[in-house]
Length: 443
Image (cartoon, rainbow, N blue to C red; front, side, top):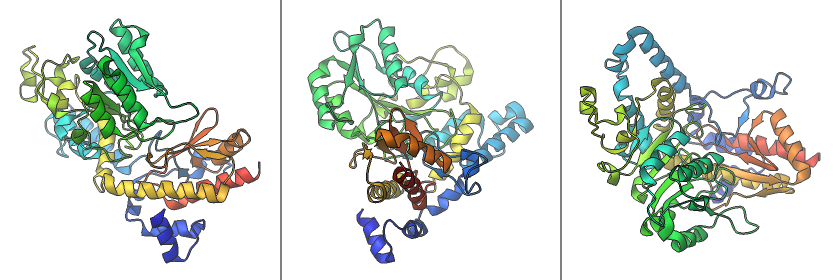
């Protein structure tokens, strides 16, 4: 808030004034990146009868599906043209210097800085839950009493189902699933409680697998502290970074995480159902004893085409990729990563913190009643999760939809707002809160 207050004083404008939001947008060093994205109109998201239908919508749903980077369409078109004009030759000779046999390297070299990894440690394959299963197949090796997997009690359902099924696959009882729960009356997990649980149960835990950002509350977990404590207790540590990658700065290599995976259709803007990426720490790069589920593409690149049927895993994450890279979905990711390459996660984080602070201020100053923000101020990324009083939830949700403010509802009374710094503006935030204020005052 200090930077916002300073800007308000310099501009002689009240924080609650739309003109202040517009002033902040004029000062934004990342404002030009918005032009990299296709922004739907109000009519396109709210229907033909929407008021101000030709105006750009307010899109605050990057925590669910990011907007389309224009470069994603351009690179996809390139690959379609390559396929049309060269056929199989495109695997080895490519007019844009992106031969398909090495396409993964184009992706991982640009993805690695976003998650704080070395390119050797990053892979690209499949979708998120499939990758969770493949990584757990390698890293969840229960022995004796060390057989439990620790997850959040309110983990995203797909994570919960994946872990439950892995436990059943190994013929273990349901008690091998260990849940970290918030304290009574609280919405979020305290780091100290997680650490205490690891200390108490550590000798029984095979894998700690939490989410970098909790999907419902928007809480950012203290990955470094939790990873250090879990590894000290002898546990393997994995992270689901679906809501963290492209949202908050990560240092997976430095933090010593064993494995991680993430989808790319949220803050990474690669398109609906787009390809997933994953991380395996460098210390596992040459560990051929890992019982991975192997396939041809995980064979070392130099001898892959020798077809000997004697598996020699590629070093690092590449050795975990059983199949060749699906080019058409990797192309849209590459287009998005080209946009990320124009900035840094540190600069995106600075803007994100300003946007969420401004959103929080406006909600308190312009609405005030009937809303509880459950996302911790000191542990949040681009998302604020709001709980509404029963009489406000439906009127506010309907008003946002009608006004072309795209956000996310979670039953029974939660609305998630996620101003993404790559393409959202301070005026977007102001317009969203203005709709909430009008709906609340009419209810």
